[in-house]
Amino acid sequence: MTGSDASRPRVAFQGAHGAYSEQAALALWNGAVQPVPLSSFDEVFAGVESGEYERGIVPIENSLAGSIHRNYDLLLRHNLYIIAEHSLRVSHCLIAHPGVALDEITEVHSHPQALAQCEDSLRALGPWRAIAQGDTAGSVKLIREQGWRHAAAIAGEAAAEHYGMAILHRNLEDEPANYTRFLALGREPADADLGGPHKTSLAFAGKNEPGLLFRCLAAFALRNIDLSKIESRPLRGVPWEYVFYLDFAGSLREPRCERAVEQLREMSSFVRVFGSYRRGQPAGPTTE
Amino acid sequence: MTGSDASRPRVAFQGAHGAYSEQAALALWNGAVQPVPLSSFDEVFAGVESGEYERGIVPIENSLAGSIHRNYDLLLRHNLYIIAEHSLRVSHCLIAHPGVALDEITEVHSHPQALAQCEDSLRALGPWRAIAQGDTAGSVKLIREQGWRHAAAIAGEAAAEHYGMAILHRNLEDEPANYTRFLALGREPADADLGGPHKTSLAFAGKNEPGLLFRCLAAFALRNIDLSKIESRPLRGVPWEYVFYLDFAGSLREPRCERAVEQLREMSSFVRVFGSYRRGQPAGPTTE
Image 1 (cartoon, helix red, strand yellow):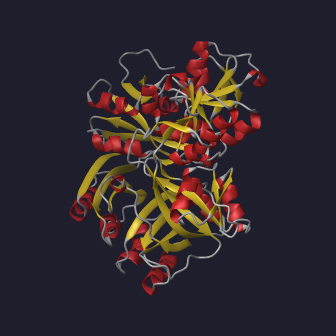
Image 2 (cartoon, rainbow over the protein chains, first blue to last red; image 1 turned 90 degrees about the vertical axis):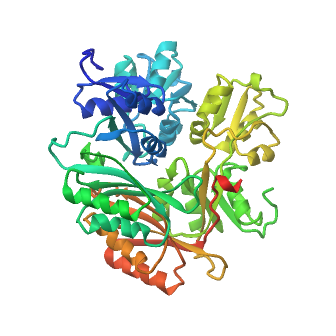
Image 3 (cartoon, each protein chain N blue to C red; image 1 turned 45 degrees about the vertical axis):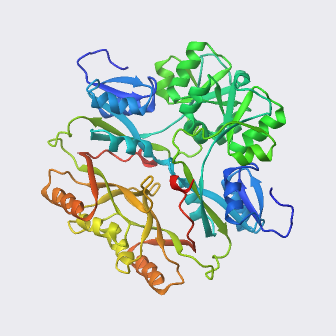
């Protein structure tokens, strides 16, 4: 599944084989990449920046849990570009050794976030202990390696397939509209010649005074540039100062977008463009 | 600690006694309330709406994890007002039975979010199993009631005090700038006569067309009204339509703020004002 062709670009992701990030990478590049599992997001960013891996893929927001601020922080700290995006419908499965029955299970392992997203379903299924692990697919790997027949894991279907384990239950998430947007990272900006509508992501900051955001957004509104995300976040340790995350429709290769960002620089104290890339399909409840 | 005076208003919160929400309620009202633990946020909103409890308190955003979208959804679904806010520095403690030593511990219980926030510290302290529970203080209660000497919980100092348990470690959170903003809820708008600067929270929605947000924000910018939060969120099941969460400085009792909201109604397809209330102090790293 992960491909053995050494000529395929290596994509670093956080987690174990079968992780949602790996699924997103394979879907985004039609399987023509070699996903490499790493244990932290920091290692993913550092590994791509140093050239050890050609690309990286990280989750940036979840429809239930919101933005993953830690990965925005890492985007700000590292010199990388967003080169693509992919939205994945998160569908959690209950996974155990083949032949294990529900009533043999006494504990369920997964990432804390996944355990939280399946809280009601788990309560309805059994009086199990919920064991927190570093990642979803890694829990499947652990149960497989340890030969535990009293334990199940919550992870995606791909993890069950990868480790030859059985799916006891599907769609375990309490809220079905559960999808995660992933960002692909590279050392160079994305190729502008790719077809389809583009999107640009950036962060900017400014002293919080009345009208700051309005003046900043004028740069886009006056050029009819559509926004697809805006979020304010207080700057750590700097009271009343904010950083804003903004996504807009269009590429920096278009002069009107370039001029909008120039105007934004004038109005704010700091602008960092993360990249222009092809817009992915939104993965809403209607896509499945 | 929770007060036995039956004349004190009852404040519903999610979790067990000693929870961060209870700490926030006691800090906000100087201990002059009776906090009532409930098992879910849904019960908190429903209980205040039905009149069973005079007030409620819920977390709305965390500096690391971002906005708690579930509670924004509940705000939209219920007929309640935000009547106050309180920011609490989240400082996680490792809590066990008095006399228990670190090397007797084999497992750590807490809410999945708290386990995730202490991941690095826990790894450095011992090779423990991390057991996910419904809430932080509830884990302390469970370990106390079960008499488990092989287990510790991650929760706030108040939980250790409430259950007469010992603190083995403080400031267990990997990222010290960890604070949570809580909202107090009531059936009637807050008293406008309270002193101090005010804040108003609302949600609005509109068809995503270029300039929508800019036109909406003009209502505030043209009146020099300062924004303290803005966040966009795709509307579930309605592609390309967005809901925005916005906080601005000022109260709806001020004519210029009232007019700004009137103008916002003209520009958007939906506006819901959650309330005007006294602005709390930001709990940044500088407050401790």
